[in-house]
Image (cartoon, rainbow, N blue to C red; front, side, top):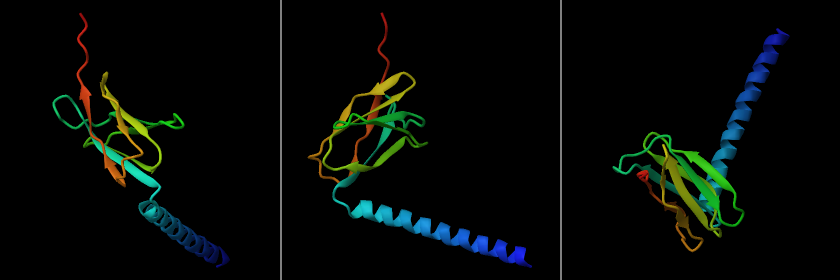
Length: 128
């Protein structure tokens, strides 16, 4: 009998903790959404034929700290970096199967809360 009560108590505790964690995650998302010092960068990576690239690597470089973050594109070629500082410049580029995009810059003067930068891969240079 006592073992059953302990199992029920553990189950209830686990449910309460899960609900609390879910609430904290939602609160953090809302905080980021309302925080003017935080922004998001999103976009799509496409190949030279304008087809979305799944599995491409998008690299985001913080121009202040030189820290690089990476994202693997989704099935539809989409990528997303959230929690970025609004007062910082970033450089973003994509690579896939030896192809790469041009470097694009997200300036701190860009006031969009959610900035969209699409990246197009360039064909490999032909060797002579």
